[in-house]
Image 1 (tube, rainbow, N blue to C red):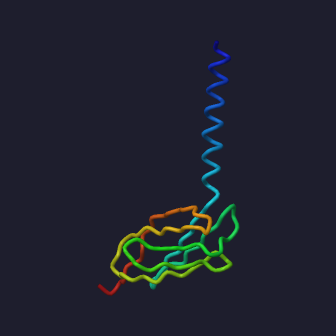
Image 2 (spheres, one colour):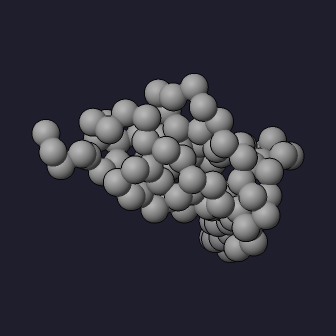
Length: 106
């Protein structure tokens, strides 16, 4: 009985680890600068062309180029944080909350 419990426990642990790695092949990298942010979408470490990127609180959508990158202008200079979301052409989604730089002249 003890061997069965150990086997079931190991199976459950390996399944949850495997499931976690299956969902983590999409990555969203954000580099903020004063006037906006560079956003790069990667899948399995490779750039994703054609992904639609948006920033919470804005109406604008941007599409990544062949290097998986797009520049998103800061529409609200006094925003402290925001959530970038990306949707790939096959419908996969990823989001990342980031701290946005503030205009230092306030």
